[in-house]
Image 1 (cartoon, rainbow, N blue to C red):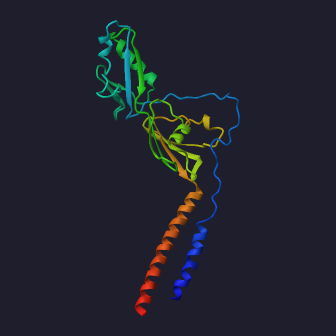
Image 2: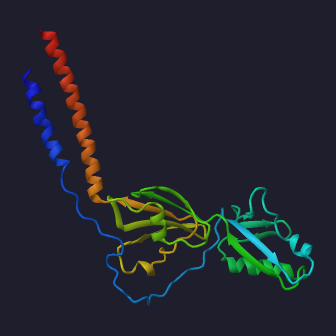
Image 3: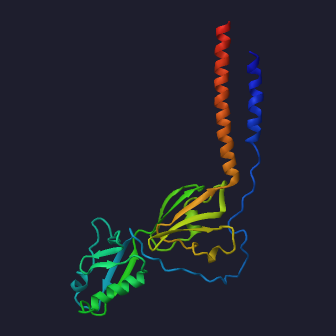
Length: 255
């Protein structure tokens, strides 16, 4: 039938629209110049959040190991890690000292509070030392990266560049200059933006990530446009497929 001859002409414009050249996207740190290593490294103290798991190690000048041992959790079976969960009220429940508020404090501030409880009003330990560590430092990354998902690190410091590296890098369709970071601070969520191409990246309060940060890498306008074109092409292809099927069936019935 004659209609079948015109189908390729209907598909051609859609195909040409989907083949526009991709615009060049900015590279990492492309605005950064050589500063001969004079930049000052700024690392903010992490604030404890609900859901954190804290390792609390207490030592003292006591010559009896059992004196310190009663204030420390035994290692979990099959693991060297044990800790205290910060509950929904922002407290940890120490097995000897009771409930201690932790949310919003730094590790040093919480250590000072625990040390105070060990010495006032009664000296439970002589000159105690309290060491606190995060045991569940993790962030989540979504969007235009090679490997989206949760990133867990054994230490307590992770930069945005390190997180992007662990996620396999931003894809060719991702916006390196508009990375969104959602962070919880004192029970409130805040949203910040960071430009991976900027020379000011190291001064951003979001360069050093906090535990439980959510990182979102948005698609570029070119990517969004291409996705819209692909959807349009799929719809047109589907409609043309139906037209061809009807035309073929009609042609068979007419014979």
